[in-house]
Structure formats: C-alpha cells, structure tokens
Image (tube, rainbow over all chains, first blue to last red; front, side, top):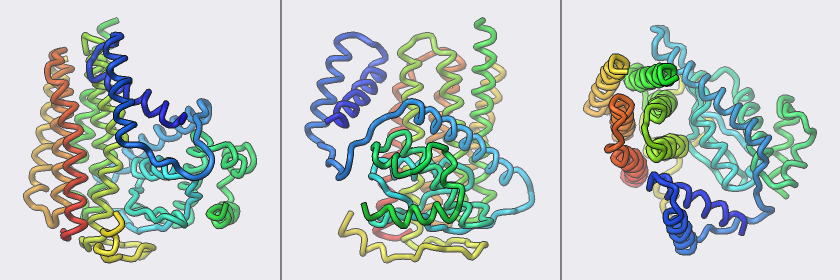
Length: 190
Length: 118
Length: 86
C-alpha cells in the first residue's frame, strides 16, 4: 500500500514537471492519471517485509554514489586520453544478499555508474550479479566493494530486519573479506 | 549575481559537452562492445546531466527548470538500464569479448533458453 | 555565454561525428546500438546547450521525448539482439 502511494506521488510529480507548472488542476489531473496507471499496471507485491526510506542513510548513499560517479568519469577519461592501454578486462560473479528486486535493481544500476564496472547479467535465487570490470586487479576487491554498496542501499531503503542483519552500526562491516562472503552465503535462506 | 550564475552555467555546459566528446573518443579507443559501453555510459550520463543543469541555471521559467531536472534524473535510471540490456544481449548473442585478465565467471548460455521465461 | 556555447557545440559536433563513425564501422549490431544511444545523448545535450544559449524553452519537449525514445530504442534493439544474435 505504502509502495503504491510513493509510486503515485512520483508519477504525479513527473506529470506536473512535464506540464511545467504547479497548478491545482495539474496536480489533481496528475494524481488521477497516476492512480489510473497504477490500477492498470499493478506492481506485483514482493514477498518479505516492506521497504522504507531512511533520509540520513539515503543521503549517505547519494554522497557515496556521486563521489563514485565522479571517480568513474576520471577513470574512463584517463583510460581514453592516455596512450598506454592498461585495460585488463574480466567478468566477476558477485553473490549479493538479494533482499528484494528493488534493492538489487538500484545496486545493479549504481554499479554501472561506478568506476570501471558494468552489470552484464543478473541471476535470481541465489541472487548473483555478473559484472564486467575494466581494470581488474583482484576479483575479491570488486566483490567487497559491491557488497559495501549493497549494504548502503539496504540501510537507505531496505526493511528494518534486513538492516538489523547487516550487523554493527559502523558502515565498514563489509570490509573484512571473510565476513562479507560468509554473510552472503547465509542470506539467501531467510 | 546573474554574472556568477551565467559563468557557472557556462562552465557546466562546456564541461558536459567535453565529457560527451570523451565518450565519443572512447567509442574508438576501446576494443570491444563491453569496454566501449563503459565509455558510453559513464561520461555520457554525467556530461548530459552537466549540460542540463547548466541549461536549468539559465532557464527563465521554473517550469523549464523542472523539466530539465526531470530529464537529468531519468538519465540516471535509463542509462545504466539500457547499458545492462545491451550488455546482456551482446554477451548472450556471442559478440566477441576480450578478457585480458582471464577471469570470466559467467558462462555463455543459449539465448533461446531464457526467451521462454522473459 | 555565447563563446562557451560555441565551444560546447563544437565538442558535441565532434562527438556526434565519432558516434556516426562507430555506427558505420560497427563490428556488431551491439556496437551500433551503443553508438546510436550515444548519438541520441549528444542530440539531447545539443538541445540543452541551445536552451542555455538562448534561454529559449521551446525545444524542451523535444528534449524529453528524444531522451525517452533513445532509451526505448536501445531496449528494443537489445531484445532483438538477444533473440536473433548480433
């Protein structure tokens, strides 16, 4: 239910932005169109507990993401502009926690915009992301980084029990490699 | 005040266009589809967002600002999704792929097998 | 603003040319769709630069539609590649 409210709000905001003006008529017609669209194309409810938005964690995720986006551009720019070719491609399989479709989608999209990585394929159940890496040094390092990113996303949008399972409140839980891989092995069986 | 805003807008527009140019050069500097997609997604997205924010700073009406920022926000969703779709399709279709590191933890699956489910 | 947008237009023009070159040379259908996708982004950016140059918002609807059509086109061809091969 709350999911539908937020979808309707976003769709109505898009509608108003497209009309370029915030008038009562635009807001009301936007809400009506959004209600019609969500009624025609209902979102299949996902099993498990509901998602929510935590503003502080979301802001931290946004900051991390924007920083990584800038870094990604610097990496590609360096590779394009310097004559030496340091490309060392590889495809790494990353078993993620796979909390929900929405969270995995955000993680997969964020990966594509972070330095030297591009999501190529996704497996469901157990949830595995296949990531194309531009400068591969150590597959474990890539896995750790993606799990850290996923932890940030779960903290921002995930259900409360998932956040609790992430463990301590420090955001660096995933930096110990053994801990990170063990966590993912346990997660798929809730 | 408007002088400062205009200068920032000008810098953003030029920087964004140069990032788009960088993406264009990347399309030729890289050797296979997947590395080219790295070039096409990241700089092109950030470049377009820079240009749109620059245009929004110069826009005379609020409505235009809303529309430009809407496109910028959509870009963050559509660019990686599109790249993911193309990458998956290319991989499954067997487009030549360079793996200089030797790490390839994904096996090619027949495309037909997945068609029934999607 | 005019000199800055001149420079921006020059960069975008060159970028469009490079995308077209990749579109012609291809190698595979996937390369071509990546090129077209980038080309659409360059066009959208060009409309944005025009809006910044003139303060004119007539073309903003074109900008929205072009950006969305670019995504729809990419997705469609990606599905085509997946079925028929590149």
